[in-house]
Amino acid sequence: MGFNHIALEVGDIEEALSFYGRIFQFELCGKSDNMAFIDLGDQFLALQKGRSQPSDGGRHFGLVVDDKEAVRKALAEAGVKALLGPFLDFRDPWGNRIEIVGYDNVQFSKAPNVAWD
Image 1 (tube, rainbow, N blue to C red):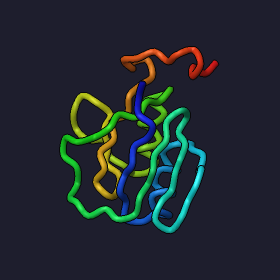
Image 2: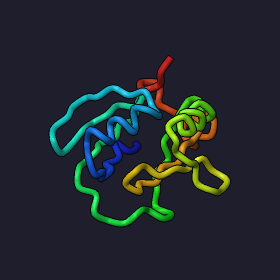
Image 3: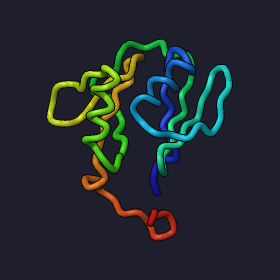
């Protein structure tokens, strides 16, 4: 049916919440010293303290947004450079690679029981 969430390893939970808060509007659903759960529309991210591997190369996930250009602007305002290439990809401070996908480009339709009005 779909993914429940994505877990990202980060160096510091508070710093990660601050970083992602400069780019996205989200609801903080839970937090401890080592984890935070943030709702982004009908998606959520689990942020987990303890990133140990190097920066991601091609490995990434696509985050669906209503307004891709608003995210591009928020990235620029936060001082985050988009990666070169045909897509709107960026890395967070811990090397996690995220691709921003406009809702008009998604390859699925929501079932009526989960579709937003």
